[in-house]
Amino acid sequence: MKRVITYGTFDLIHPGHINILKKAKEMGDYLIVGISTDHFNKIKNKQAYYSFAERKTILESIRYVDKVISEDSWDQKVKDIKEHNIDIFVMGNDWEGKFDYLKSYCDVIYLPRTLGISTTKIKSDLSFENE
Image (cartoon, rainbow, N blue to C red; front, side, top):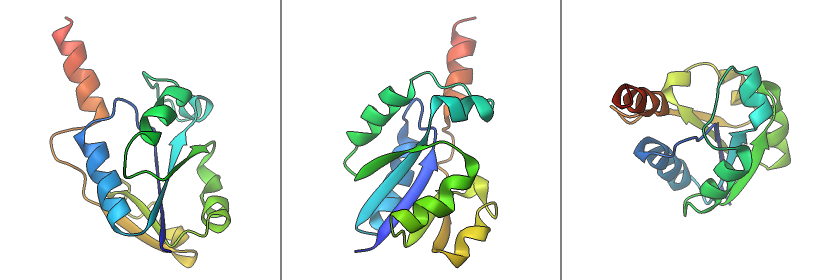
């Protein structure tokens, strides 16, 4: 069984999220998604609309996702890769090169992002509409 992992905040789920999850799942048999906890988002200076529990529930309902785990820190990835016997680590290409250090543990693949959509754009568009 080929196991794939990806990480993110996954707030305000949109077609770009679905695309990366679908492509990641197509690379293997089992997809694990690490989602940033509320505490970790604070460390990263990110604010999610939905709580960790709500984002976890949403992700667990997506057919491409087999398991959801919490992401509590930047440096847990090696532990997760070993613990879950990961073959492929997947991230969007906006992170290109940042996780190359994981190549000694598994394949690292950066997928193209979906053009024209992002959580930041959605939040900006909604903010503009409310002005």
